Amino acid sequence: MSASIPAGGQSGLHLRVTEIFYSLQGESRNIGWPTVFVRLSGCPLRCTYCDTSYAFQGGSRYTLEAVLQEVASYQPRYVTVTGGEPLAQKNCLPMLGALCDAGYEVSLETSGAMDVAEVDPRVSKVMDLKTPASGEESKNRYANLSLLRPGDQLKFVLCDRRDYEWARERIGQYRLTERCEVLMSPVYGQLAAKDLAEWILADRLQVRFQIQLHKYLWGDERGR
Image (cartoon, rainbow, N blue to C red):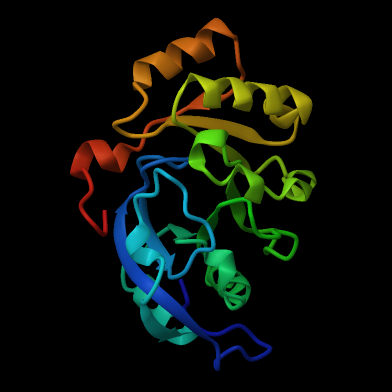
């Protein structure tokens, strides 16, 4: 796979990067696959359960070429761009396109608070819909729902039974399972995974249950 800059010239682009690391995908459709993660710095949200607050500020200044070169050093098939909130940086969009041009299968983990209209259509969007207990329900950009495609994924991170019932209502209200794959996961250490699994089964919800695999393997170890 090539790490060259695509035609049209984007060699002057810079991004603030918290870390680039190689691990197993811990959630989403590609759970378990070896993946390179590009974690961009900065986020306008402050979710109650956030486990990457170290990415809110700081980071290192990378050129687009440097990002591509470091990603290529792992020879991956899958690349995930995450944060923070990666779309808070305008140069995230051309970086996503460059990663696709390099031949990777690219996914974007985004909060759902930023406009996803300009995301490269080759990218699989993994988008949150923030629940009441997240503390950031008001930031949901519902216009994004109409932009989701079958290859995308919509994720609910749930803190409690009230969050679950809220999510169940939104799934019906917006017919979300007809738009794309819907994911539900419990907040690690806060909602018992077994409880959520039983609620999904009892309600016959057509959603994918998931846990954060990396948490069970490595806990809160950074870069995992």
